[in-house]
Length: 52
Image 1 (cartoon, one colour):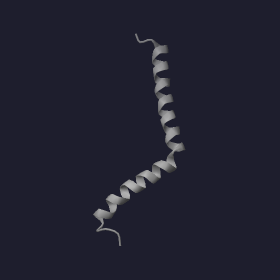
Image 2 (tube, rainbow, N blue to C red):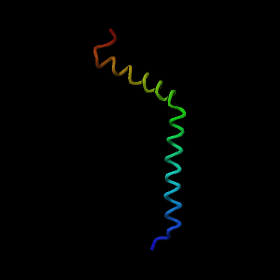
Image 3 (tube, rainbow, N blue to C red):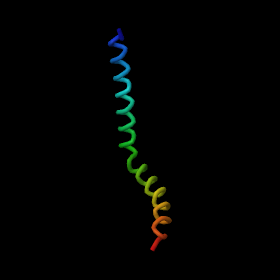
Image 4 (spheres, one colour):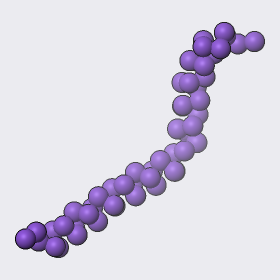
């Protein structure tokens, strides 16, 4: 039988890591949005026939 405390520690560690990643992404959301906007704006302009 699995050791319940080891399973609980593993699950809580996983939840903590996912939560940490979400918090860091939320804190850096403005920079991330600006980066993605610059990156995909160039691609979108080529597919839409260029800037007008």
